Length: 394
Image 1 (cartoon, helix red, strand yellow):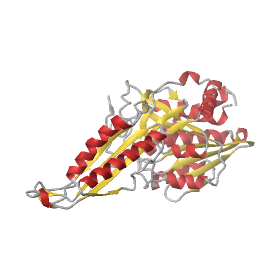
Image 2 (tube, rainbow, N blue to C red):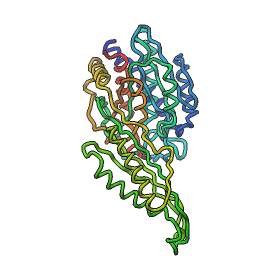
Image 3 (tube, rainbow, N blue to C red):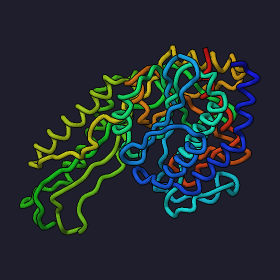
Image 4 (spheres, one colour):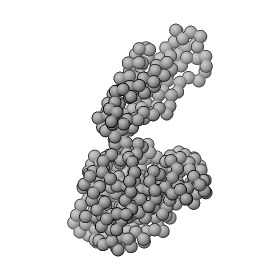
């Protein structure tokens, strides 16, 4: 495959990728509820005559069989939106399209991920006989809640897979650049979900109650200190509490308190150590205040960090250079958000690329998971080029 043909394939998808991104954007669905989204995906796959497998839930696996022997390559897009009310304005002006569903919007860019993968698939179908091997295309349910990945990975056990690649749009990189580098790219996540159980009582006699509030407060402050003093300072582990809740009346000592948050890491050893510190401090402080502890199901390490394979990364970058796209390769720091894509990297070597969407003139570049989040749609063809470079690059 030569550079001229690749760029022609990309150019042919420019209108389609924008149209599909806007369709997905206008009708978003939250994690595990993406039935309309899946129907649209199925409609497009059937139009392209691509065979597909519907998974339990809303996920899809589709396969493009190449005309020549070769590797089994996997491309992935996530399909869910967020329970966020979309702002009609981005950072500077009115958005080109907004969600039609109140309280739900694609504030992380999964609409763009689906649109780019469909466009890449449409390009591949047009040159199917020139593909060496198979291209397995995954549309993953519920990435934001981590609720579809287990079903997807279980289904993929039936497929031979040699390498994988995915893109994530990123507000920290300018539109017109894509970052594809080896090593840590997105953080692993330690879920924190702690229930403290005591004994309720009247606010006038705390000695006759077992307050869950006091140990909760001690746990929050002790964990901040412990992370500073017990974790390797050269391997950053962040700690963020989002929920501390207990009680409803000022004169009633509650018998339960809840602490919720996350810790993010790139080094797996430090992530495991962080979880152990959280559990040790929680249980020792709870015991000292005569409380008991139970944990949420999410109180564990999931997902793991996304660590790009150097050989796959180098091959994609060579492909970008081969097809005249090396000038679009850009730099950005790793991202402390978490991604279920790490599970695919347990199946096979692979990489996650960051596609820049920031454009100060257009007003795109607001933080992910924010009502003002927007993308520069002119970046989408570059994503198609990167995915084609993964398939055809040598």
